[in-house]
Length: 306
Image (cartoon, rainbow, N blue to C red):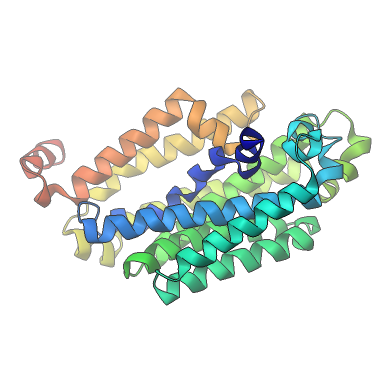
């Protein structure tokens, strides 16, 4: 039963909550324990909150999941757990979340509550409304970034918020597009995910191209904005943009040529080129942002980017 409960909370999906660490990285406090520990706590709380949302979704969608080729193996849809057991576990999880929020900054607690409310609205109504469904998903990612900033008491750039909005829209629309392309029986579309009947592969491709372009442009403008240059004392963060471009292009390649994309988590954790790209982006960003705080890094940066 414990294994079934672990599957119910989907720990593999917690990778999405790494957006919480973006403010930590770009605030130049990643090596300060006074900031690192609250960020880790924020990540854990967001992970618990997202798991609570997954349980609610599985309870609500148990019947539709049973006709889905992949979701039918989830603990509730397969009958490995009962709805009553899931609800009891949900209550315990929410109690733990409330208990942890007592020790957090009030503004962070507000963000978590807003995240839960937003997802409840999504689960009960918005997930069946075309376009609004992906915007609510995007808002959830934006709350992760804002929550990460609230947890350590820093502000985030407007360009960072825009980048988060665009990349989360890109991932959400990619998921819808892949769900449509992989659906074998179009007649069961209402039973599997009602909102898909209002989408088409062609429409998803069009708005996904816009979201991809928005992600790249917003990130590039963030790296050279006055605030960024003033904060980091350099314009060299622009050299991390090719990693973002490659990541977007690689994701689109996997979606269009390999018919993947239904599970962004699987792509990010299993595709070796994307893993290398993300790791390289992180290392280069770390070097450029923290060059003055790491021995010999300043000399290396000056040689790489004269």
